[in-house]
Amino acid sequence: SQRHRYTVDEKRRMIRFLIEKNAIGMATGRAIWRLFLKEE
Image (cartoon, rainbow, N blue to C red):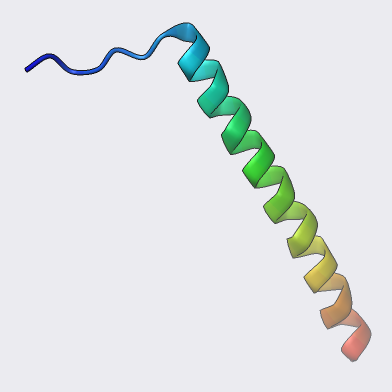
């Protein structure tokens, strides 16, 4: 069986998805961290 070859478009879409997911994770992480620091 042939392995699926990703097209340039598919790769771009995957990279964009990962960047967006990471950006959202970083934003929520910072918000949680700020609340954590305020607790002290």
